[in-house]
Length: 110
Length: 117
Image (cartoon, rainbow over all chains, first blue to last red; front, side, top):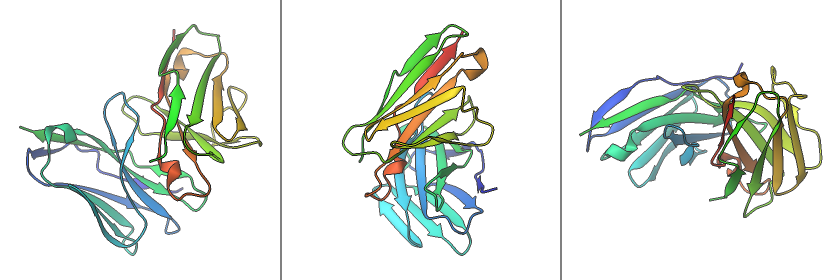
């Protein structure tokens, strides 16, 4: 059974702080890794994807992948109130199926 | 990014009737489309994978006779919930993949909220 594990949260951070979200996955054959943001009642919105070991930065977001540890993280700098949402860690396996974590709820407080 | 459109955004139907949901890739040809279901406070669960021109592959526990999937063209897949019951009420989401472009399966339609009364 291929699994993607996330802490359900909620993770509460003050506005302007750094939010750190973590995820582990079980299948070493996983190809690609994604972070999605999902607001209540809406479809997931792609924030970042990462294929290679190391860091990938895009604006306020940095994704980190460590294949040896089977670990992925997402850092959100300068957190905004609008960042409050559920963040889904998603892993694509070798058959192109997406395997979803259960999501971490982030609350950015004023 | 690749654009995937779903229709309708929401639908209410009576128990026992059938409902069709459309998923279209607007700016690319989708060799594969994926259908997901999301219940409240849960993550997305893959229901089935459909390849253009062939039968869909269903995940374990998903009734293929109840959830009919048709992928007749490279830009359109449909999911029909047959003889819907209140327990089928859920958020249904599709994604589409362009076989020639890395990562396009990562883009989702806006979802369809189905309520069966």
